[in-house]
Length: 103
Length: 355
Ligand SMILES: Cc1cc2nc3c(=O)[nH]c(=O)nc-3n(C[C@H](O)[C@H](O)[C@H](O)COP(=O)(O)OP(=O)(O)OC[C@H]3O[C@@H](n4cnc5c(N)ncnc54)[C@H](O)[C@@H]3O)c2cc1C
Ligand code: FES
Image 1 (cartoon, rainbow over the protein chains, first blue to last red):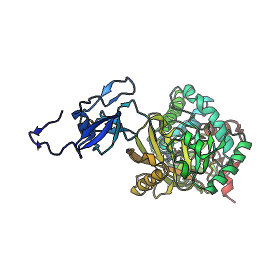
Image 2: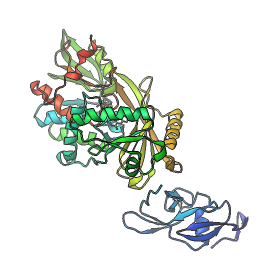
Image 3: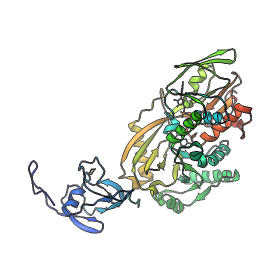
Image 4: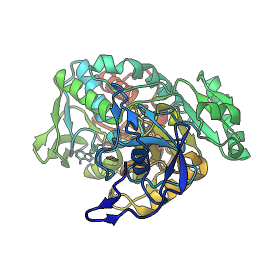
């Protein structure tokens, strides 16, 4: 889902010209947008699960404050996807608990 | 040191007053990296560290408070040939003293700490019985346990003077009035020289500042052992909750200032990225500083002072006193009770600086 015409920001600018990888699946993204926007546009709602109860979490505050949207991005765990812009070929993984440290 | 000593004295039914100018664990004892390390010490301290490590595992239970002690191991990493040569000599001595420590190859070091870069290191030494604990918790645990056994704790109370009559202590003047006792222990870390002046003693202990940085929470294998690399570089360790602490070697400081500096932040992040490049995108969430307490020879003063009756100096652990805290409290309590500490404290006499 994308908002095509925003009441304050106006019409959507930019085109989905790059690809990123989410759990091995390739999705398209608009250069400059945040990872979370590209995920929501692709219908992905669950970004991670909590480490104690394994409950699903996704986009919540959208401004980098709540850490609900954390995922493993290019092997770095717990990256806030709502404030991290996409880049070509970026590899994103759903994060289970604190994730894995793979270097 | 003060809280540990208060506990071991109170356990022997000795009446104790603990005076603290701030709150319990306000300074180094509550601010350090939590390294419970035996390897890489001055040989004089090694027996104390090894005995202390025997005590750490049972402290949570004994004190009735979880201190997050874990035997995660301690890994010293050589960044050049010279350091590796020094390590070999040290390990030989430490093994002779009975410490379980061994040399590791770069590949083994990387297995223990996956973020190390094999091509950049020459090897290391690993001590599996070394570990970490939570400094705030252990200091608080000792204080609470001492209190439960009858010790009197005066926090937010500062010692402002000491009244002498000849070579005997009449009173200790504090911001909450006069106090006193048969024995007075100066366990004020970097402030030991200030207390020394109150009784006319020169105690050669200098403060330095060490700054720590804390990363976001990471998976537990991000920094599994406590990592040290020699020279003016740093150390790295991970808390139970997953935050990695980046430690900085101490720098001279004016006026007991524990502010944080941009220089230290920039130094530490640069060194970390050279050494552990995979931390590049990891977020730093906080930083803070603490004061370390240096004697000229880098080992503490733990002794009575012949000039003043009943006056003990128990300070100057020179930036690595956390591990020894439990045994130090026990030994000083024995020194006070019957003058016979169960391990020799000869190397730590105050008189070594009077020659
Ligand atoms: C950032 C940092 C990291 C460290 N990392 C490690 C580590 O990983 N492993 C390790 O073994 N060691 C480490 N250390 C060193 C260790 O923390 C210290 O050696 C140890 O805590 C010293 O304990 P202490 O009780 O002698 O001193 P402190 O903890 O400094 O206690 C002295 C107390 O005296 C009080 N005081 C001072 N003057 C007065 C007065 N006039 N009246 C009343 N009270 C007074 C102070 O408020 C303070 O609470 C580190 C230190 C720092 C700062
Ligand atoms: S949604 Fe709250 S931090 Fe990203």
